[in-house]
Image 1 (spheres, rainbow, N blue to C red):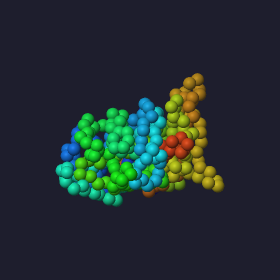
Image 2 (image 1 turned 30 degrees about the horizontal axis):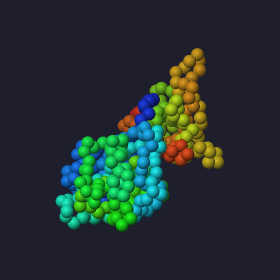
Image 3 (image 1 turned 90 degrees about the horizontal axis):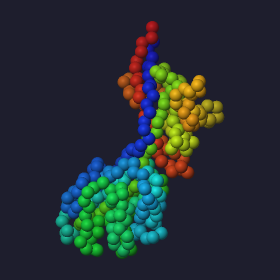
Image 4 (image 1 turned 45 degrees about the vertical axis):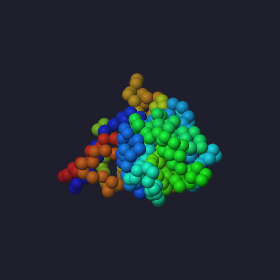
Length: 328
């Protein structure tokens, strides 16, 4: 008889932040932002999405032009807000520099959308017309390029035109805060900065308290995984119903009771007692043979915190080794 065996090692990951994954429609996903975003330097027939800074902890409140879901044909004071100091964000920049040279006729692209897997916290697009230069003010905080376009007249600005009478760049922020949709029309540059909640990387311990950690992968058992608490991470903020481990769901016992407990399972033994003084979350995931392949090397835990804790996505990974063993 053959069995699949999973050997899992403890991996402690330093808490950090990762860039959320995105999907795009009628937008070029262009990777990291170039150093020079001046006029006519980075042209494309589609708006380009550049990744700027990852996992930035804001040292002060940051002004944004849209912070609530809805459809906007122009943005006034009622829609603006701030992202509070201490929030960890990842920033992206929508940059549209069409394949024309000013003062040629403006080129319009419609039906653009960008979807993230963590909430959009705010959109920044003002560039000095009839209001503050929130886009320019945020360059040095969450931007990553060295040079941006500085317009030589008030009629030419790098931000989206959502002002009363200039509604050629409408924006919609979805109700779930995951998707921003927009049209853009420009013969110079249109830019919008998108700030999303960073994905927090957490420490996990697969099969806590045991090493080497081996499992019979037969689709009938459960796989225990601990999310480790610390001085700056409270595991009770995690929404257990949202958790997955490499595609596995949280196991259920009895009448829809999740197999989740809160206990201190990490740390070195001290005078016969284990633990490090911080409460950990231990989750049992229902095994499924179809989720594993021979030679798999990593198990990944995902999902999010409760909305009252910010709704931020979490991510943790542990080393695994799936091998096929023949049993006589």
